[in-house]
Length: 291
Image (cartoon, rainbow, N blue to C red):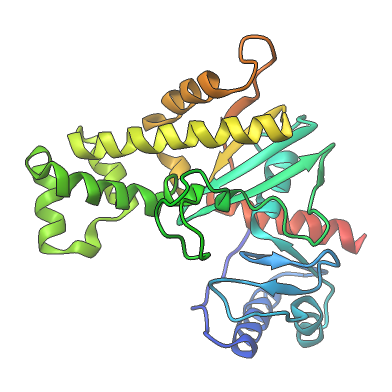
């Protein structure tokens, strides 16, 4: 990373593409740029030119890569943000040398990526693996995707805050700090705040973190049973609090894995590149495509 530029995210598709073009133009004033990579939180078609659906952006079946390339006059490579992060960790980070690796990005929700022999597996339509919406609790918490009981509703930054609220409603006297803060400002009870309270020893926050660890272990066992990876990399904002939950999650994972004790276990590591992973990965892919 040699330079950065930021801009607020516009609400319309055209304005968003204009904003991307503006950021590229800003960086080109000081640097020679031969290609551009875009990492997008959404469904990217197998041609890697089209964003089929992005839940938090305006694109719906839009040829984003071609339109941005027209605006900036440079080749553009498009990739799902979790895939880009997995590529970055494989080339420059925690998963170097791993032939079969899964990346689980735990933030507001859960993003997932699978690399086979170092190559991104996208599925028939380009949307695999959608790990965050595996249903782990039939009839459970409502998810924005329309289903109930999705994994990310129990194992994410959002889920951490939800669990803390449920525990506070049940045991309000056990957390004077979180109870006081949520009463004065309910929006202040975020996953990041719960993690900070857990580090300070807050009982409710630590119990919420233990719940997240249990659900992470549940999901890891599912992922390992299906993909049998050599390595699992935990990424995303929640991974910054890994010392609070990863050892416990590993114990749950081992206890639930089919044939545990009679098969090698996937190595669990936290991402090395942090929030920059998607940027680094999209740059790696753009450079490869431009060769």
